[in-house]
Length: 258
Image (cartoon, rainbow, N blue to C red; front, side):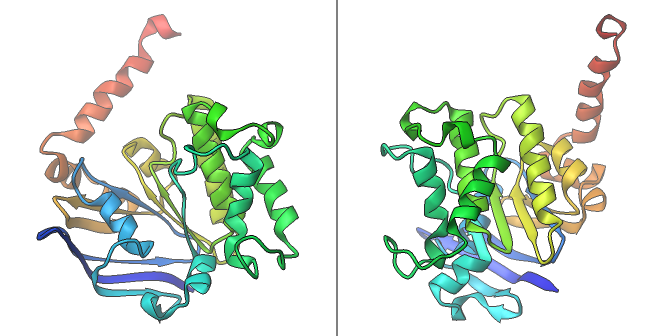
């Protein structure tokens, strides 16, 4: 089943065109990595998909125009990980995670969601945040805040999960865990993932497809290894990215590390 499709998507703000002519499709089971240098339009694309910024072109979710969906219906299908916007308030970790259930409630502060407790517990366990559930988010490190935000997104249980640089501020063990959690979630029936990534190694390892952007325009959309080809990466970054990555990898083959 096709989850999400964009055709000729463009965004203009303040008289400046930030995104132009972006097209892609996302099917159930897909993981789309959105890559490109700073200023390429990656976060702009995510804001358009989330309905935060106006756009032109066509955007459909489950073959229905995104603009035709009611806010709660849309929120149950398409979810964006909040990058720590809650960290200015003294909520507990559990309270923040529980906020992810708002599309399923009769009202923001009311019940009516029989699956809430199970969803909260599962999200806390999946992200390793269960032991911190009663801590204020103001006491969390940057990496812990990222995991709390991921837990909220997983508790939301959308069918398309959108993550904008989710591994920022995470140490290596939690980066590995985060990608593993996301990959397991993607493999559930009817699920798909869109992730903005700077880590090209992670994009090649986990993504099924990739969208390469430069200066707001698409350079490539294809299966991950095809889209992340040497020529496409060189065109996006104006440098031999593949050679640089190979040079960096050689350091792990030195004898003194053995």
